[in-house]
Every structure is written in structure tokens, then in C-alpha cells.
Amino acid sequence: MQGLSFYIETFGCQMNEQDSLRAGYHLAQAGCRRVFSPAEADILLVNTCSIRRKAEEKAYSLLGRFRALKRKRPGVVIAVGGCVAQQEGQGLLERMPQVDVVFGPHHVSEIDQLVKRCRVDGERFAAVSQITDSVEDLECPGISDGKGLKAYVTIMEGCDNFCSYCVVPFVRGRERSRPYRSLLKEARRLTEDGVKELTLLGQNVNAYRAPDRKGFRFPDLLAALSALPGLQRLRFTTSHPKDLSEALIDCFGSLGPLCEHIHLPLQSGSDSVLAEMNRGYTRSEYLEKISALRDRVPDVAVTSDMIVGFPGERPEDFEDTLRAMRSVRFDSLYSFRFSPRPSTRAAALEDTVPEEEKLRRLHVLQDLQKQISLEKNKALEGKTLEVLVEGVSRDGGQWMGRTRTHRIVNFSGPEGLAGRLLPVTIEEGCQNSLRGRCFLTRDDTGG
Ligand code: SAH
Ligand code: SF4
Ligand code: F3S
Image (tube, rainbow, N blue to C red; front, top):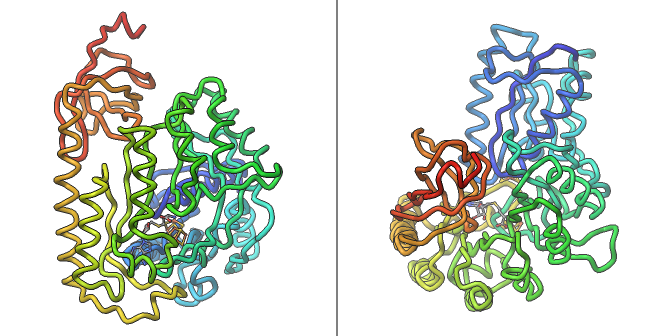
């Protein structure tokens, strides 16, 4: 494996991003070198997502392009990982002759061995068995965002919720929490290396239960990590409304590093659709939790995911969703058209809402959200907020960072601000970001 080059392309959620980091880490340990152009690579790795039909199609179209590359260079190994790999298994090898190795999310840490086996034996195979016990191997030694400022720590894997539309429990397997000991070690190493912001990752993070400490649950984990020296910000994603306990609500506003933001997907504002989705809460239960959260921290940012056009969603159900949005006033929202996924219960239901009607509902919902986001961002004009500076803004010439509520701020200020926590005065609230100015001088910032 020494001297081989690899290229990774990642689709899907943060869990997949994290898995790609781990795959890259294991390949690098085996002596391989990462390249950023597929044409230069000996190993092409595609980490796929299956959450919606479109996500799956993207992976297939990339594999089509890789097929052309492989025609020119037959020695190239193509390995497909992630959730489509888990879902399709051996079938992917049969349908796609260019693919050599198929590996599921539970086999990421063996990637170097799998590629080696393929190269040595010339064998094509799928490694997609699901492991149900240890999650020790999720450890991702000391890998941050590349700037050493922010890092993700996976605390649990899989999901047992079986929302009726969702493929995750099938492709990621049963819910398993990582031992507290190994999490703490990883988090401590990251903060000792200078990481200022940690995000705890899992499909259902607030269901965390330490397997190595009796009665130690998610709020206990937040409290323990908040005490790490040097940690400025702590975030987590994604949490499920039914597992938003009072103890977790109490963490907001009382644990210093815990940021005032929660991503708490509502999915629909209609009780009958929520029941069909098997979400385990009603609209009013959700609203009560939000109001308890806002009693503690009035400015807490709440973001959500929403699905339109779930089977059987009537116009009045959709109206309920809009009503819930007006009531909560989410700070931002990810919205999707329902698409049936393999193995899920909803895939067996009649897809009653025509595509053009799904699209219409999506646009109505997105227009409402744009208006709410803009109003909320405008309300911040004139305020001074703490910003963690990530680097220069996309259009260059300005600094870019995020507030504790996870809003992007583009701002002007002196040189040498990257990696710092600074007060920034907001001058303009836009739809998806804020514009501002840091009034500190270079001397004030020690830059
Ligand atoms: N574990 C998280 C996120 C799951 S996937 C959670 O429980 O919220 C991210 C989002 O994709 C979901 O919140 C949902 O809004 C959307 N999604 C999942 N399956 C879908 C499907 N079949 N069709 C459309 N959107 C879907
Ligand atoms: Fe999917 Fe529901 Fe689990 Fe989220 S909680 S991953 S939507 S099954
Ligand atoms: Fe996609 Fe798998 Fe994540 S389906 S959203 S990559 S868990």
C-alpha cells in the first residue's frame, strides 16, 4: 500500500464526513497519500448517502464518471462505502462492474485491509455485516477540521427510532453509544491540541447512555465535557424531540460552553402525519418543549428539518405545518420532498401527493422560512455578538465566523483574527447570514 494515492468523495451527513476522515486516517496510516483529483488517484473512494432518492442518484452518477476513468487506468481500485453500500451490498458489485469493494459504515476502520485484499487477490467483494457490540473503533485520533479550530466527536451510532420514512435504522443499524472513557480521551486530546469548538455527533445524540458508567446519560456527558480546559463551545446534532428531557433543557444556560442552539427536527406540524411518521410526539408536545427551552434561554436558536408531501398529507396537514412554523419561528430550516426509501414502512404507503404539488408546498414553506429568517436576522442589527473566527469570507476580503447560535457572520476588522473569539457588532441582517464589524484594533486583539 506504501506510496499509493487515494481520493475520497463524500455525500450525506456529518456522520459520513466523519467516516471519510477515519477512512483517510487509516489509509494514511497504511502509507497512502491523499490527492484531490480523481484522475491522479490509485484508489477512488465514494462515501455514499441514501437518505433521499436524489442523494442515491448522485452517488451513481459519480460512479458512472469513475467508470470512464477506470477504462483509461484499469489498475485503479474503486471502493464504495456509506449507506448505499450497506443498502445494496453484493448487488452493487453485480450492477456496477467498475466497483471493486463495497463496504458498510461498520467497516470503515478496515478500509486499508479491504483495499489491500482487493489488490493482492484481485478479488471483488462486499463487507457489509453489521457489528452490534463494540463502538471503540469509532475513535478518530486527533482529527479536527484541518485548521485545528473545530472538531466533531461521534458519540453514538445507529438509530432505533424507525421513523416510517427513514432508511437510517436499516443502513446504520441499531443504536450504540460509545464508552464514556474513550469519548473523554478523544475530546481531551482535541482540546489539548487547541480545538475550541466540539460538536457531538449521532443520529439521535440525546439518547446517549454510557455503556461503561451506570446511569450516565447525555446531560451528564455535556456537563463532563463542558469542564474541559480550553473548550469554548460545545454543540450537538441531531437530537430527537421525544428525548429532549428536562435535564437536557436545564443544561442550556447553565453550562458555559454549551451554545444557545438546538437542531430539533419537527418534520411535520400535523398530528396525524406525525403519527404516521412514527415520530412519538404531537405538535403541542413539541411546542411545550420549545417554550420550556425559551423560558431558560430566551434567545436560543431552534432549527429544524421538515418533510412535505408525506403519503396522505392533506392540504390541511400542510397548513398545520405552516402554522407550527409561524408559532415556533425557526431560525433556519432544512426542507425536503418526501421520497420513498427501500425497506421503510412509508415506502409501502401510496405516495398520494403528486410531485408538482410536493414542489409547490416546498416553495410555499421555503418562502415563509425565508421571511422568518430575515426578520430574525434583522432583529440582531445593532447587537454585539461573540464570534468564533473561522477564516476569510467566501468572497474574500472579509472575515467569516459563527455566533454561538450558529449564524454565519461576515465582517470587517484588523488582520490576524483567524481562530479567535471576538465581539462583532452586527450592521446588517440578511436572509442566510449577518454582516458586521469588529471594532477592536490590532493591538486589542494581540494580533
Ligand atoms: N437523525 C436525524 C436526521 C435524519 S436524516 C433526525 O432524526 O432528525 C435528515 C433529514 O432527512 C430528516 O430529518 C428528514 O427531514 C429527511 N428525510 C429522511 N428521510 C426522508 C425521506 N424518505 N424523504 C424525504 N426526506 C427525508
Ligand atoms: Fe431517521 Fe427518525 Fe432515526 Fe432520525 S430519528 S435517523 S429520522 S429513524
Ligand atoms: Fe445519509 Fe447515511 Fe447520513 S443515509 S444522512 S449518510 S446516515
